[in-house]
Image 1 (cartoon, helix red, strand yellow):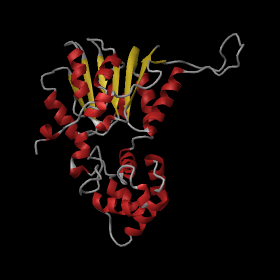
Image 2 (cartoon, rainbow, N blue to C red):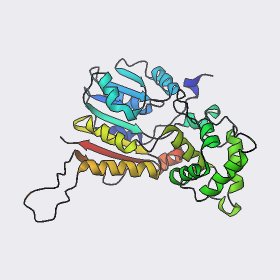
Image 3 (cartoon, one colour):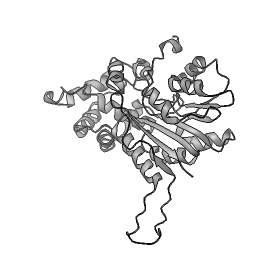
Image 4 (cartoon, helix red, strand yellow):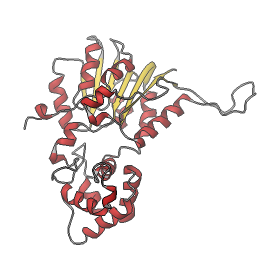
Amino acid sequence: MDIEKNFKHKSVLLNECIEGLNINPDGIYVDGTLGGAGHSKEILKKLSKNGILIGIDKDQDALNVAKERLKDYNNVKYIHGNHDDIKNILESLNIEKVDGILLDLGVSSYQLDERNRGFSYLGEARLDMRMDRNQTLDAEYIVNNYDEEKLSKIFFEYGEEKFSRRIAKNIVEYRKTKKIQTTAELVNIIEKSIPMSFKNNGHPAKKIFQAIRIEVNNEIQPLFDTVIDCIDVLKNYGRLCIITFHSLEDRAVKRALTESVGKCTCPPGLPYCRCGAVSKGKIITKKPILPSDEEINENSRCKSAKLRIFERRS
């Protein structure tokens, strides 16, 4: 299969991100979620030959596609890794500070549509959901080995699924007689767990698949620290642009940005600050930037996207 030809991913909030990065032609920029290189290509168009783009992705398929799509550019460094390790990655490249960072936290359309990756609740595929296929933890292990309480917890916290307990119980009951190996088997269990009257609000398996994917790829727990680390490695007036796609991500990002702004908690009237509040910069977007109706019509998967922008001031 020609991965480059089949790697379809429409870059979300593309113009808004490029504008938000406020690109310095000679600067150093990081695309922490390289994907199909849509955002990266637009960044590179604004960079001079002295500028540098660092593209990071956990998915080797994505890196291979990006190398092909960006083959006309000589100022790109490709990293098979995780944006959570941004400080170590930059240190390995002997780079201390960068001018801008972009994190698009969505799953690519290619990953969702590529059936053998197991991200989709449509059709039948092996339960996988790993963005980095070198890691050992996958969806099959979680579904067949996590106990009922742990399954219920991730379904409720990461999927905001009101029937999390019932679904977890039925999964554990099912696997007593047969290992759950495919997405279709899991979907069947989920569908039977949800009352008919609640099945008219999207696909019944959507929230559970999201929850398992988040657990497999550890998408939420490190996110707060990742945002802080990204801000720490920005140059003065450098920009961080982050696109989130669900409320858990957005809350973690918003909390990290708010903390980085720094807020004095001293009682009013004191002649100077005694609480030690330190500001690392300012939030450019008082409210998150949302996709236009036109973009949503062209790409329905972007409808939950939110872009937040932070500028470093040191």
